[in-house]
Image (cartoon, rainbow, N blue to C red; front, side, top):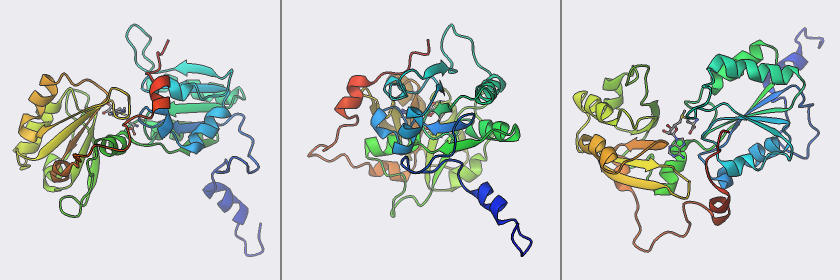
Length: 293
Ligand SMILES: C[S@@+](CC[C@H](N)C(=O)[O-])C[C@H]1O[C@@H](n2cnc3c(N)ncnc32)[C@H](O)[C@@H]1O
């Protein structure tokens, strides 16, 4: 304790990450800790270097179904994989069971990576896992990832904000307990920014009608990006009043992200074509969703 009566050390230990950011810096012991890591939108080359470092240091990787096989292949050789994602014919893990599993692994002294699609704190229940583990006294590190909205916009050349068209972007879920979530639709319609809708494919028609009923123009541009950053990514464009039909006609399936707003209409399609490919060749060769066996 310092002479001024303030415990400077405990303040520092609360605000510092328990793990150093640089992989060559001395490490805090990672046994018995959980790293909640964003895997990005799919393509392995969109993983952050920090995420790669944590994967290589893992004894066990607890992952969702939407994590790409190529990302999982980067884990330390011999690291165990536990898939807790939804898959047909498999036991569906409830959130409480996932929390309990992470706690059990950490208390068993394992170096645990909890790998989640996109960014762990955006519409992925990462916050619940962090709170549960910290309450139980487990050290936790959070590693951000490229969220699906950012990946979808970048790979489709759609500006999320634009000086001429949108000065905000709002991430919303399109999925509630019995259909659409309970959102402030009037506020969303009024924002005149870009809406990025996660998990919205099944309820897209309903979502569009709700926004139009609250004042958003039916002619507002929309784009749907299916499997952003995967080799078979697709982008379809239309307007809000036709969103449901657009998704049905093109047989869009999850994972897909819906972008709505005037900035979406400023998509730069470039007649000369693009320099990059949506997916790098290495990632395409390795790619494919984790089988969740
Ligand atoms: C449970 S949310 C997880 C979001 C994630 N935490 C993130 O930051 O991207 C899953 C939804 O994210 C969107 N999503 C995830 N990966 C995607 C991808 N590669 N392409 C398009 N949408 C994706 C879809 O809307 C999907 O239904």
